[in-house]
Length: 592
Ligand SMILES: [Zn+2]
Image 1: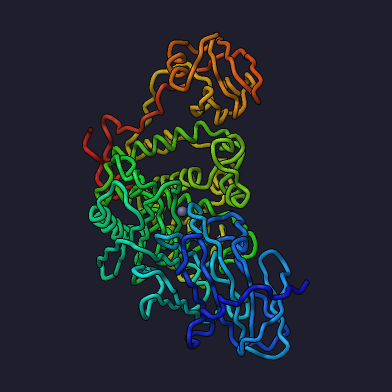
Image 2: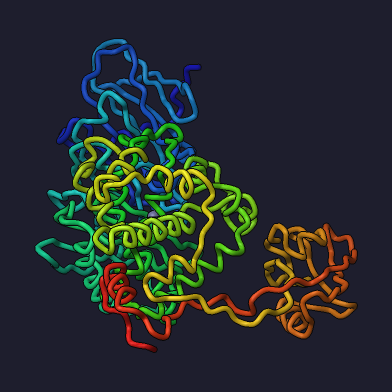
């Protein structure tokens, strides 16, 4: 269906004065209040009957279909002389511009950009964050050609990106793929610079919060040299940390030589929350190697129009997570005891995740595109972060043990960097197993089949003992097996663990618990009431389900009162101390 052009082609007037690259983009952000930008692009002289221009269906790092074409409005196209070109949409993400003769093509559209937490595109009166995969359309014939971006911004706005910037408000890239892997942050920002190891770093803050930017910058500066514990080189000369101190958004995304980290503005304190922020920072920085410089073959190059299926996301996310906290420990930002506490949280989550017996990390990687996530998924799924971290930990300890500390999991990633760095081609799980064989002289196929391609049976004692650590379990207390949120009407169940007393009694998420043995309860009160009961006791639970009051009998089970602690053994042997040193690259800590 051809569309008549009803809109004024104002956006088309915004193209740069002179062509600078094969494909030139411009975005006007001078009326940002309503989350709108005016985008234009010029493509080279094209002699085919039509040119398809596309918006990606997803952005790198977020393995979910996002249908980013959904922000495009008022699309229009002209030829080089400014004559209107007819166009039609041929699928949800593709605009087909028809040509009657060879000509350069200008397109223009209005972009609605009011999405913050997925880190795609956000324009408001204080800033704009532009992940180009959510902003700039591409055409397959010109995807490999050089591009330029010109920004027209409100007075006082400064623009930052990992891209080269020949002049203010102006960026260039060798091709569209580099552009979409280099988000642009523009607005009224605080920015800091430092050099470390001969490379340049920038830290850009959007928003205020309970942090001292100088402290944050000083701590990031301690993180970046830690990469040399794993890799023999750095795949960039310049790197930009973009920090959104905001509200209602948390999370982070890795890019080629930059990252965007979002954190609620008051979550830089207390100390454990700040450590979480630093751990995220290390995680994203590690991705500069693991994902951005070498990655699975299904995503080289990225196919931005549909799902890219791989069985290796666990290695890309989980292993990155596994490496992150040790960066902080070696940098002196996290105490070994704080790291052990994070391991104990990981162990606790695993033990209350029945899905770990259902889904392998390879399957979870493949199905990441449809992962539901969250507590409710725990009964059937695992997430590539937690279980991928555990699989990486298991592989690390197995390598250290088998080789007497000679080979660690870090060596696997250095080999991936050496062999697949630069993305000439991607790697498969067979490539990883080949590296394992080369490093150790033995086959890891059986290990892989057991722990990666099948749900792993994790023996945490066996992971901790070789490095002189152990699990210390607390006393057993009465346990229901649900998690809940306070709601104005009572306590609303968030999840019910499969096989738990609450599951067996028939409770489901969203049930609102209001009474135990005839007495009103809230979340706090329920915990107190539970503490007064013994495992094996039966209680009567009053609850609402879809506003219908009902009761159920619940026979309480037993569970450790606190999550099991990861602690040092009393008398570590010389072998345990030596393997600990190879595991974390710090000496075995003195007894706390
Ligand atoms: Zn990640």
